[in-house]
Image (tube, rainbow, N blue to C red; front, side, top):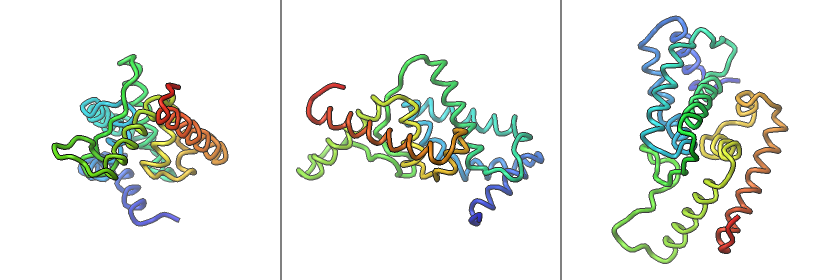
Length: 195
């Protein structure tokens, strides 16, 4: 059963498919921040992430005829975004670092820079977040992508399975393995062992 937001987004995409450019603007407003956060963590550069999101919406316009009425607009948009990120990473041909700054809407990891001293608990928390960011950077891009989709973007396993073209069971296994690998890398960094 679709929620109201999903129905609204679906109707926007149907209108875009039919050539309604005003609907494209509304779809952009609805998805821009989420897609930007996803891109930013995958490509590691805020400016590049913004460029990738702009490219995604160019692709939405270009490939709008491929969207099907029974399709999940969220999965379709993340598929376009994922492909645009892969294209960007191939072009840049270097591994990008995971950003530790928050998204403009305040979601994601908090900013670690500050002019004032942190209380001990906050300092330990900031160090943990920095280690987590370093651990994420060391994961293969496929595992980083899975964790981003499942944990930061909040996509359901069913949506991820549609996006990646595999079963829900395979997604669950892959996410479990990615979390396990993240934990191992994180603990290695915390203990001063470079994995």
